[in-house]
View 1 (tube, rainbow, N blue to C red):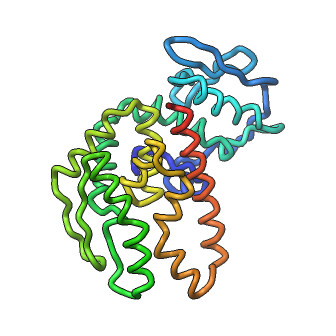
View 2 (cartoon, rainbow, N blue to C red):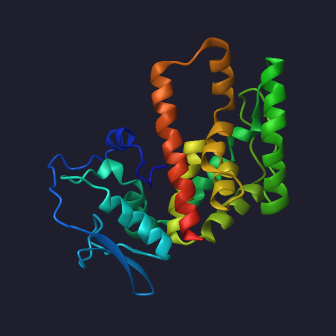
Length: 253
């Protein structure tokens, strides 16, 4: 999603969000949090670190602030931004998403227009049965709990979704604060699914379970032909990202 830096440092570098090559030596002993400015601010030895745009890192809940502070406490001799995904989410929410809420919500809605849960295989029968059994309940959940009814299609030919469904997804996104919206805008492209992203954001589905659903086709192929080593590394990184997003949403509630 163009407005959101990837949590994967390799992808982030490819998209122009490369971290500074200059290594920053750890200059603080302890990271903590404090209630301030109507939220919870992250402090390093009592002083507030800044986002890339120079803003203080103030989050809406103590749990979210502690999630960020824990990353600072976990740093070694040098600061390693690639190991700080919650800090990246917080900074993105404060610096970017707060200024681009409309476009971000529109991008999320566009993902619903080609949601992975709606594109069913034509063959083989084993995959078809698995998709029906595992994806169908979440399409039903979206219709029942969110008021988002998406149509399915067999094969890869695109079928536009009803404008009302996409408008509903956009409205749901805009109901969120900047921090939840940032998490959703990160989760949706990770899963290729607005439905799965919303399910994780609302606590209806675990992050790793959502990832497993999103890669149902890939897992089916791996069962038949084996696991590619590079793909396994990529999947492990995505799994870690999905779990972090689950923790992020939990901390914001």
